[in-house]
Image (cartoon, rainbow, N blue to C red; front, side, top):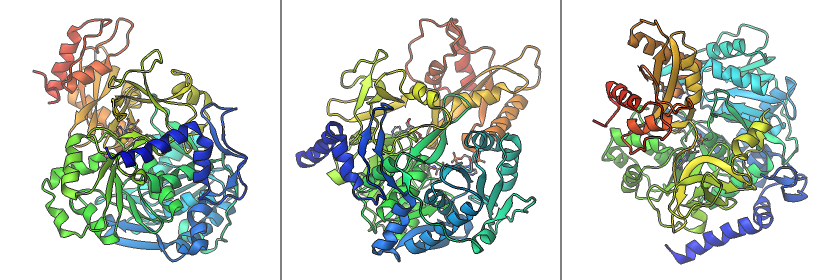
Length: 638
Ligand code: COA
Ligand code: AMP
């Protein structure tokens, strides 16, 4: 480890914990505040912390107008690159993006949207999505973006929780070459929801024109043509910027609420310190705006920093081939790419020797960042070998909004340890705790928790569910934020994130709740009991597998019932759940108190060592589970 560089990291990390006010107060100076803060950090009301209390700013102003006024008006702010629409490329300068955003903010304002009102955005990866998000920020409204791969039912749950008077959508999304009309999904979602929006604004895409059928529907272009631009409205640093729903342990998603001030400060700071980016650089997060990575690093982070951001409507493979990422990097002079390891596994599978890379000039490309799931050492080694640039694994969550652990470009890179996202980022006092809340020795696995307060940019609360917020994150280990990840810190201080401690699984970098899937399976008329586990998968990291115990007397063929439940999960949760495998069993393994032993089932499926739980009711059932997994071709133990 280079001592000079490790010293820079160490000093920054120590200062951030010893004197957070000085550390983050300094970082906040790079932004424009309409009213200075009175206190950098306030822990008096909530121990997890409120940042920049008393201060006022506007996130959209800082992401757009500030750069226009500071001489970046003609710099490209956003490049929309869309192989799924015949390689369409649209470039918007900071001035153009600001003007379109101001105009759409005017559209929203004309429909009665103001400070604190919620706007739901159900849209594909098109520029209007970014414009809609920033327009909300401009007038102090709270956006809630819903990922396009969710079904109507999930939309309905979010509509009822966020109660948005306005929904912004598009006529369709495009999955490689499949056009997915959004209006039927949206109308079903609105139909199921108890709360009804008053306005739906629709971007018409030529691949599928939606018929506007009622008074609440408004065509985006028409509305824009007559709109008056709206100005930025100052909001409190602690006012919500957005709600982003993420999987919890039940079918009811958690509405993560992000503030304006701490969020802008942390993201702006992270762009240079973690990602090594400066204003004018081209940054690409190949994710989706529906996920936190998209919020933080397609939209807010790069624009706050004055970078050019890329909005890519395509996949790593199939649009048209496994050279797609290299084509985008070369075409737009990308300096840093951020994606999920699963994307690299998909590329590696199709082009194991990286032959397609040779067709492109990657000379401007400097760093690859991976997150969303653990970067497995094979994928890390392959990416390093092919790209010959640093490959950086970093660990974070929807809740934190940015890294808990990373290798920081701005402090000089520390040596990489495969399987580790390196060291805790400034602001995070990361500890490994046992079930009693005691610190674990180096190298021993426990609950990864961070000492309160949380770093700026972390969630403020859960929307409409402050008690759930406290209960989910702060109750089990008083004085700490529970990440719900298990792992260890080694003797050099490197963090290793091994698994979740709850029922969340990670499928192709997407966070999904097995509990939510179980709720859907249990609703099937033939199912008496069920369990869903995540089984290791070479491409997607994990895949969900369902176990069904049927009601007495059910005699329908297994394959029909399995087909039913697969369709049910797709219809109720959405295709993104990637739920395609289920099997009928006679019984489920349980403890004597009736708790299903999902962890043990998963270990059998993944051929991992496991200890027979002392409280198991009937160990013979584990053999039956193994046999069922073998029928699916999943168990390796024989
Ligand atoms: N709208 C509608 N459907 C969607 C969707 C969207 N926005 N996104 C995904 N889906 C569908 C897919 O078409 C697929 O449907 P299918 O079952 O009919 O094939 C299903 O949801 C599962 O999607 P996914 O798990 O993404 O699988 P995939 O085979 O389409 O692609 C990868 C696999 C690895 C190429 C892709 O997941 C990927 O690029 N992931 C890495 C990047 C990323 O998004 N990371 C997120 C956090 S950083
Ligand atoms: P999400 O909220 O969708 O971003 O998912 C967060 C979860 O993904 C974390 O709690 C981890 O379980 C997992 N995760 C994200 N990044 C990493 C990483 N770099 N290493 C290990 N796990 C990760």
